[in-house]
Structures are given as C-alpha cells and as structure tokens.
Length: 261
Image (cartoon, rainbow, N blue to C red; front, side, top):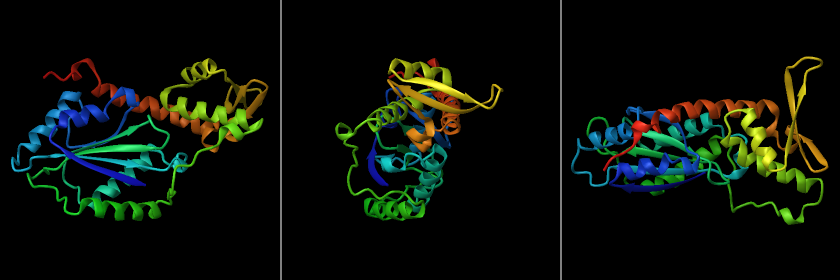
C-alpha cells in the first residue's frame, strides 16, 4: 500500500478528475456533502473552505495504491475501511470527503478528496504528512495482511504454454471486463466479442445456477480454475455491487450535474 499526497486550490478540478467515467470511477463513500449532482458536491466543498480564508490550498487529494497481488481480497468495502483507518491515523477528521475507486489501472486504487478546512473552520494539520503517511501505510499493510510490493510483478505471457496461455488470456479478459459490467447478460456479450464463450452449470435438473465455465478455442476452464475470484458466486456478487454503485453514480452524473463556469 502506498499513498500519493497532493494539495490544491480547485475543488472543481479535483472532483471532476476523480469522478470521471473514462476512469470507470465508482463513488464508494462520502461525508458532509450533498450527492445530488456534481455541482452540489463541488459547491459543498467550496462553501466550507470559505470558512477559513487563510488556507490557500484547501483541497486535499490522496491516492491510495495497492498491489495487484491483493486484487482478490480488496473489495470496495475493505478499501473504504482501510481508507477510513488511514484518515483517522493521519488526523483527517470532522471534515467533508469523498472516496472514489478507479478501475483504469492493473492495480487496485482509490482516490480520497477531502476539505482541509474542517467542519468547524479549523485547518486539518499537514505537518510532516508525507513522512507520517509512509509510516501509516506500512502499518496498515501489516494490519490488513496486504502484499508489500518490492517491484511490479508481470507474468511473462510469451513464455506460457498451453493450456496456461489460454487460461491467462481468459483471466486478463475477466479482470478487465467484470468491473465494467452490471449483469451477466452484459458480461457474456462482452466476453463473446473477445472470443470467449460462457457456459453455466445448473444444479441437477433445476434452473438454479451453481457454476460457470469459460471456453476459448479448444480449452475450457471453470471460473474458479481461471482464478478464485472468478467463481460464479464471486463474479455474481461483483456484478451486483457494480449495479448498486452505478445507481449511486447516476445521482451524481445526471444531466443536472453539469458544472457551468
């Protein structure tokens, strides 16, 4: 786990950056803000920052990056828990914030935008914040049993032989596609375009689905054999989470959310 800390003067720029459809953004958590529209989020931040004109850079923006090794365990709920723990240890409290997850990179990561002017008009302390953040990230990495990365791990795909080569291709397709889908119909359609066929296993003579298999070319794998996070139950759970997050996102990215300058 690593953190990148920046400070700025434009809430409009920070909020529009993190809540961006091109980054497949999902709003996971927020406090002290009206989520009716993008404008209301920005306006809420700006209004509170006005309580303390001495703070020239009221925008706090921190990205929390995790190792790709932790993809399976890092649910959105756990990432919010870790982010709140990080904020508490950093002294980021009693203030407005949003936590947004992006899916535009291989590794899991979230963005925290918060108001450096707290709910009482006081300044959130930032003394030695980068030093303190590095120490806290190491503590949280140990606390939550996260992978401590010493470098970027890459599978040397060109060296793989069949059937592992095809299995890895299916893995890469699922890793990229599942976060973009809100239901099985959408996922099956996208995988089909990538040359991957989806088959469901039912329980006995019933229509109850209990498993999923993926076929590419002459090879077929159960979802859990591609990767444990791609069993039927885990994919189904993630798709439902995506649908729920999409409903929340629609409240912000509605036509009324257009920001006028």
